Length: 140
Ligand code: CMP
Image (tube, rainbow, N blue to C red):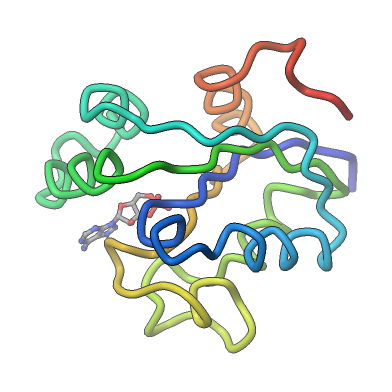
């Protein structure tokens, strides 16, 4: 297993409920290092570009509206096998299916408002990180 970087987003349902610190503690307890982080308020167009792979899905418009509805925290997590480890810490997309102790089991409100996003593969992670961060902002 090699050291990887992955993109994480703490979503509007979580920032609204002031859960950034509790979610970051889950990442750090799992050995993931937050090497870049910023709070931003996405426009619907920026959310749409980020999630364009889902453009044909029935929930796309709702997803983009939601992601632009309040601030998000975008972050880069680094660690051994960070992509898979982050997905483990997040839990299943639908909180009803998420294992106990995962972020989504503890905090997510629904499949749409599920508190966090994480890249699904190292190649996706590189593209998603570049969407939000300049190389000089990653401080490993
Ligand atoms: P995320 O990991 O950010 O990737 C795509 C997002 O689409 C996903 O988390 C969910 O928040 C959202 N999503 C997936 N399925 C549904 C659905 N059936 N209804 C609404 N949103 C969904």
